[in-house]
Each structure stands twice: as structure tokens, then as C-alpha cells.
Image 1 (tube, rainbow, N blue to C red):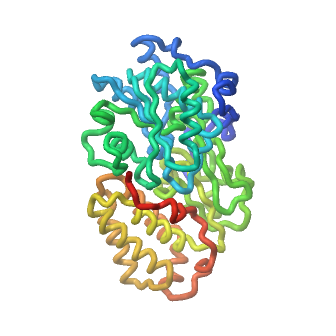
Image 2: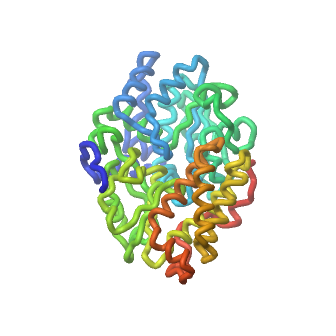
Image 3: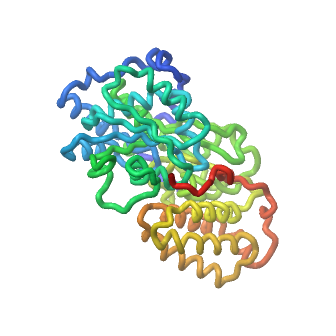
Length: 430
């Protein structure tokens, strides 16, 4: 049974982030001036960090880590820090960060300047994926912000799944290689140019700007006690109006699907949290509350904010096999669980999905999932195993059909889960 969110408030907040304010003039008219004077000096810096802590803002990039704690750790590191704004959004099922950078870029830029002020940084690096002209547009808008007390840079990263991991961003800025590094040290201790580095998702920074403008109490008027504020989600798959929506954490899964126009056809499941997320069956989980706090028997979290509705005519095992192969090919290739484990898991999932499965293959897949989980240098193998394990649980009846050799009802369906086109996956890490 789905858990109840703590003190759930408004589930459909008025737009806070996605307001059309693409130019600096539109942004200032909608949100006001950058409130640096309100937080002047060292006392003001501490007050800003305290405001973020009291607001309860959690990272919107997937992990949900408390932003106030991260700010404090970097501020207390003892050297002049660097701020990295992560807008790469390498999750194929998500487009929330691109939407935010397109419609309200200056809200993100204000948040980055305020974060730099809070921790005492003098340099901000905005990271985005290459292509589509987004970086060029952002550079033009940054050029208009002549009074910002920071040095701006825009980094164009390769289109790789793990290139947006925090240590990978730092390594790319330092060396031009976008692969994750081993920890420790953590980026908050030693990151860009060896300096303490704050890495925050662009949506997180946009919320930080609003907290500075309107206060911690205002921020907490929506959401739950442990996950307050609003958050952006990308809803795709078999819904009538796929797109990016702003919701309050604690909103039920069924209500989120309704925001996107409701199911376009009968659904069998939904993938919650993107490709490191969890499959949940439908009907039966419409009341599952979506937030950064684990919910339900599977401990489902909103993760990267991507939700994909699976129609009954598609096969979740086939869809998961496609993504498992993609994740295996997208690994940095730096440790055994990724180099050997993920391709082997993808092989087994393809056998399960395409009718070459046997009880021995199923048992081997279970062993491999257990061995790989928790053993990687970064979270990539953990996310991949979470996805596959949830698919085996959610589609247990389909699995029995595959084990029995019967024809899968969804084997011939068109692919549903989005993956980058081959032309966008050149294999480069530079």
C-alpha cells in the first residue's frame, strides 16, 4: 500500500519556475532584481545559507541531497570555491532542465550568482550538452549580465549518460575528459582547479533564487515537510499531453498522469525516476506519492523527475532490455562492474525479453545483479541494476510468459522509452 506523504499540502502549485521570462528584462519584470544587497557581507552569506536550510530545499538533479548542507560544506572548506551549474540533463527521458534554461534562464543564473555569494566563490561554470544551440543562447544572455560579481563560463559537454555526474563535470572542466573520478576527495573538498566546488542542478539553483527573493516560509507552502517546494517533472509515454509540468512533492502518481491529459490508452505500468528509477504497475499504484522520500514497498523516489507511462500493448521487459543495453554502452569503462557486469546483464535481459530465456538464464541474471550492485566507482551500475530488478518484479507475469516460450504480446510494439539517436552517440568523452 502506498505510504502517505507527511502533511501534504497543495498538489498543483501556481507556476514558480516555468514562467516565460527568457530575456533579462522579462525576468526582472517577473521576479525582481538580484537580491545581493539583502545578503551583503559574511553575515549575509550565512543568512542565505540558513534560509536555504530552513526552506528544506533538496537537490533536483536526482539524489535529493539537502542543498543547505552542501552549501555549508563548500563555504567551510577554507579556500575560494567554484560553482558548477549542472544543466547537462543526460537522462534521455527528461527535458525539464532544458525547458527551464529555455523559458527562465535568468532564474537559474540568479541562483548561481547567489550560490556563489553564499559560499564565497568568484567563478561559475554553466555546463550543458553540446548541440541544439542552447549553449550559444545562454552565452548571449550571460553577456547581458554585466554587473554580476562572478566570472562566467559555459562548458559544452559530450552527450554521454554519466558525463553529468558531479565528478565527471569537474574532471571535464579540469582536463577535457568527462568521465567520473573515484572519491574521495569529494568535489566539495577539491574540485575545479583543486578548489572546493559546489555542483548543483540548474533547477536547484532556480529554487535557491526564489528562496532568496521570497523566503524560506514561502517556499515551504507547498510540498511535504521533508521535501518542500515545487519540482519539475517530465511526463512521457502513453499520455495525451506529454511534456514538462510543475508539481508539489507528495503529489500522487495518478494525479501527475492526469496533469499530462491522462492515459492515451490502457496502461500496464509507469517508470518513475528515469533510467535509474523504478517500474510500478498500473492500475494499483495511482496513489503512490512522488517525492525524494522513498514510498511504497519498492522505495520509489522521483529521482531525476522523469515519468514514462507504459501502454498495455508494450512489453516492459523488452523496453528494459533496450535501456539496459544503452546503459551498458554508456558506462565510463573504468571499473569491473561496468566493463563486465553491465554488458552481461544486458545480454541476459535481451535473452529474457526476446524469447531465449530459461530458468538458468533467469538465475544467472539474479546473481549478476546482486554482484554488480554497490560495487561501482560511481552510481551508474547501481542505477542500472535498480531498473532491471524493478522490471523483473513489476513484470513477473510477463516473465513467466517469456520463460514458457510463448509469444510476447509487446514484442512487435514500437519502442517507447526514448534513447539518443545513433548520430548523437559518437562514443567520445571529450
